[in-house]
Length: 308
Ligand code: CP
Ligand code: NVA
Image 1 (cartoon, rainbow, N blue to C red):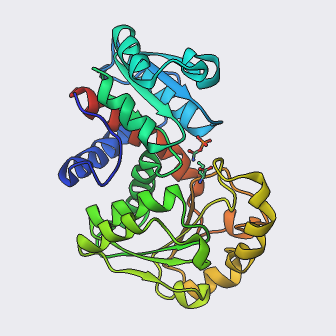
Image 2: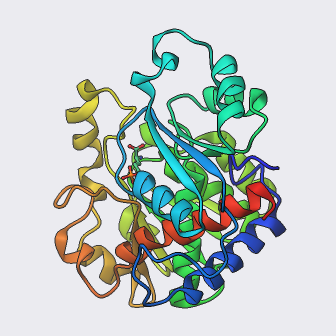
């Protein structure tokens, strides 16, 4: 059994294996109703706990549907309604849940909570987003790019806006899968230096370019995310908007990038803020394939975790 905690701590050959498996599993059930089981049922008899300490649409639904398609069962738990939210330790929660369920997916706050849970659980733990990372999202993003344009190795990803948790996982993937990343945003919101360091150590060309028009030149992927993440204090909202307004992804910016570039966003998006509707609904946008691929990528992650 293996945990899926972060992209940079997962073996790169195994990441590649999961991506290939995700693609094969997607193709195998093309055009099937969503509720119809897969031909193979690797999770038959397995129970998966999905714990949310923050809101979610995609992560919640895609994990739930993915487990069921593979023959397993789920229970969706809200952190605040568990004893976890009322003083029971993470370690004890991990020990107890491991007696009831075969796998745990958690969306939580500090990355340290995720690691503590994994340390004390005797079943696999999957990171469904923390304040610092979102590896499942980036598995889906890489899968989506490769479906549309082929291998991501050697390509240029331009992250426009806030250097947040999702950006950190993209940097981890850049290091693991051999692509380059240019960050374009205000200095105050630069990505995690450890994530930049990891990517650079693996040979990825990580560039900081404050001018978004220059940053997107020759981009293969342009990525945006919300200007205010769930863990950001609402009191910072106005300041963040003021800093990030020059970094909106709009049609002129996509034109500056060129036709080869695809537009990605993990969603939920704020239309008219970090990205315009024209870009979201335009020909270069792959955002809904990206959302769909959460399902397929995570099914491969779950099988890998359980060795099935
Ligand atoms: N992209 C993503 O993780 O979406 P949710 O917050 O809806 O799960
Ligand atoms: N950066 C966002 C991603 C949401 C899926 C957040 O953490 O709120």
